[in-house]
Length: 120
Image (tube, rainbow, N blue to C red; front, side):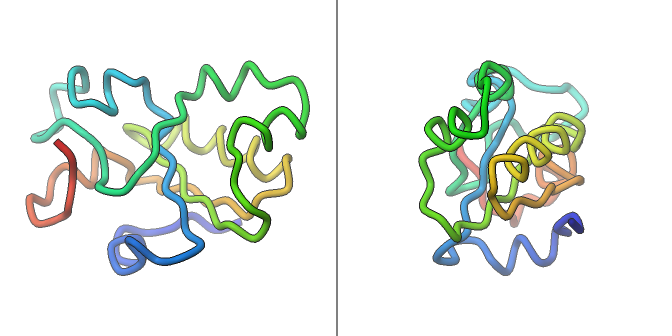
């Protein structure tokens, strides 16, 4: 499946049926930790946090679906800091039957544009 690019993600923020999952740690998501190369810390506005380590604790596709708890037909966009953790997460989501795409630019790219909505 093709990755999602910055422009498409920016235009689709808030779209019904699209869920953005941040697979970084809860500290990164909250803006309490992060890479010093990023001008901002935090997360994409509207994203939910599902740390990759929790996802890796799943033993089956059913466990993944129970953890993610999203309705059938939901499109997932996953991101992390640089697109590596989220690329792996996308494979897990797809294996559980979700339509999932990776935002390869991830927080490293998003944090560079102060006009893009983020929290905190």
